[in-house]
Length: 417
Ligand code: ADP
Ligand code: ASP
Ligand code: MG
Image (cartoon, rainbow, N blue to C red):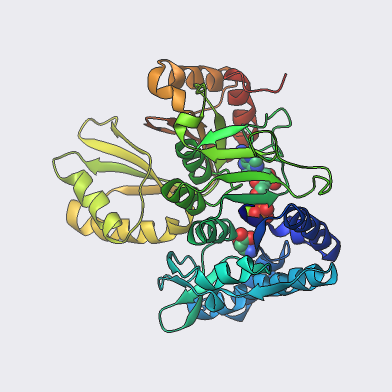
């Protein structure tokens, strides 16, 4: 007997038929003798609709009320899943975040989990009841409902798996695992059997939305065995292999990966804005005067390039910030003109960051050079570059995204044979 968390994403609970199908996966695990906690997302499209209602109600809506509105999608599916399981003859009940309780901080809209008391859930599932938990939500200080940021049900699932000491956390979604890149963009993408936590963290934070970044951090921290798998597999014909692994991708420790690939995957993120400062005075302390105020406003600067202007006396500084901080960043920069003198500001949100990720990069030279060569062969211009031990990111013009991802995917030999 094992204790399992099964998480179903939006497309997997998009209507009552899909909920019934998801429930058949739950049934299979129950009949194998396992204890099961289920975490559900809102039906696909519902959260977007709820966010849109908030925007229509006010352009400057209160984040606490936003959370009250958007958390409701998961409340609906948790109840529906419990009803369907009951109809199939199982003992099941729904749990909202506050009932567990799953406590968060007060960063409404993208709250972080602070504490989960797993005792009531453990008591329920040990007695044979299925706990159907509304993902994405918790309770913040002041007893206000909070949500965990878009895609946050993944994080609910992994955090609950850690809190109830589950043997496995299965993330059921609309693809049968983690691929070398988004399989909807590159049909030649290959499914990966295993991905190391560090690689998955980079892939998720650089645009692969298959798992929320925070869920990977928690899986890594608490050593939760996390599998990404398909809810569309026939529930009656899937089982576990001789190692007890279900079909899908295991997110695991590096030492569980037999042979690290040089490059594991390619990701693309549209959530970037490029800002270029033209003809900034070229003297010590200028970079600090530019980036200090941005940091003080918690605006995260990623790629940075500085080049001397053609006149030799000034410098051009180009960098990226998250697209949502674009306008705020411009305001902050305009204010710094008083301190360091006049400079021009140009910016664009029509840019994309494409990244190449792989643990094996640590021990291989020439990986970046290969990316530059491949992109040049398609005449794709690189606006900025940033690297870390296991990733290389380049900023390019948005219209070239698909071409760049496909080109890099082939260049590193990732295409399905
Ligand atoms: P859910 O609603 O189940 O949470 P999401 O839409 O959040 O599902 O995530 C699944 C989607 O992630 C897939 O449909 C796929 O298009 C996308 N995706 C992006 N990158 C990858 C990748 N490297 N591997 C698998 N899926 C990916
Ligand atoms: N329903 C939420 C969203 O769409 C959370 C989730 O599905 O993970 O962002
Ligand atoms: Mg998701």
